Image (tube, rainbow, N blue to C red; front, side, top):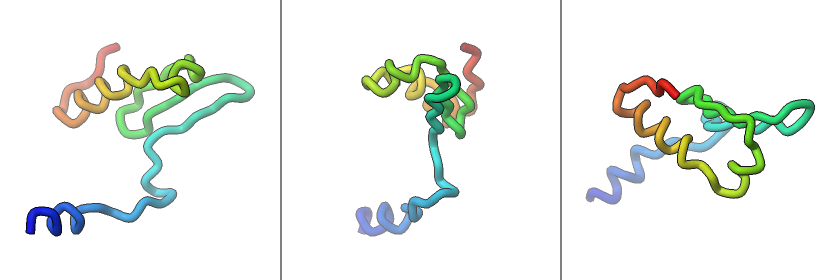
Length: 68
């Protein structure tokens, strides 16, 4: 029953559900579209350094604005 509730709460992934945008040319930037957190260090993000994005999302869901 709990599993079914979880499955029912999921939405279909589509263009309207984009979470992050990655720009690599002419400049470099990764931006989280939900929290508005961004960084110019695209290579680090692609290598898995997403701690700042996770922190920003956790603060966002708690209703706290990320001051960094």
